[in-house]
Length: 110
Length: 217
Image 1 (tube, rainbow over the protein chains, first blue to last red):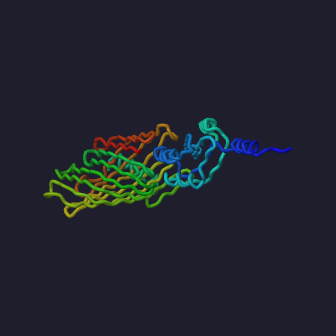
Image 2: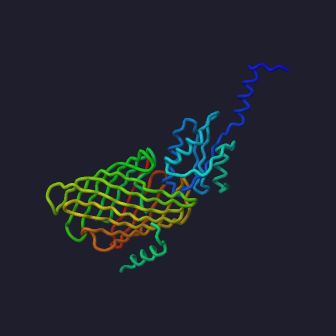
Image 3: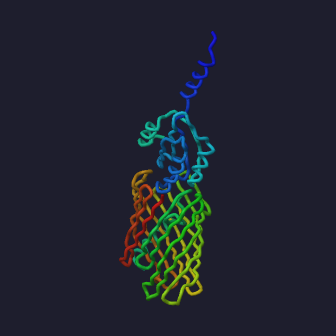
């Protein structure tokens, strides 16, 4: 069967978009003070790809919801957190919608 | 020794070497405005801008009024704050800050305006339930020298989270040099903060108001 490139490329694009991360979760050290953590939100909202930001002191997690089809490189995320005065331990990309993650963190689940 | 002094000494003993206070650096590209009313002996207003997370620039105005004599100082200064080191731990954060600056001072025990130099050091440690800070701030010139040492120890009745109201109960001990106040002035304080706004108020062992407000944006 012969598939033309006009069909193949859009299909590949759709396939890659469907597995694109929607949320970046970061485990952060030093997250003890909400008054100070506002710097994290300010730094992360500067990225054009940022749709929303969650900071959980309880779970020591900072999460960024990404705009559709966009991403922020790990190095830039680490730099943003460092500029806010914190240390990033780990970064994971997930497909968990930010609303679901917010609810999960509110329930005290990591 | 007053009951509050005994309480303060006990808290110090319990806290061991922990030590802090309001931070002079907010975050990169952040502004800090602080105003403090210190029981009638010290009133201070500060404004800082932090181009990076580890230093800020700005200035302030401090008024020192002796509660023993009629001695008074009015000092305007420009200052640079530097975060010497930060420990970002799993459940805690510790900081050491240093600062220095220059300004001009007037007073009622000398004539005209004299150049004033400012230097200080602050160390702090905090978890979500325990807070401690030690700050030493020196203002000096050819005609006077005043150092204000402040120790704060705090406990939070609950663990706050981002976006929620934080509540802290603190005990503060403060000493002045240069004839502003004799002995240690102790105070009990209530601190509340949410978002970028922080207010703190209480009463000293002399029955005077001690209050501070700080805004980060």
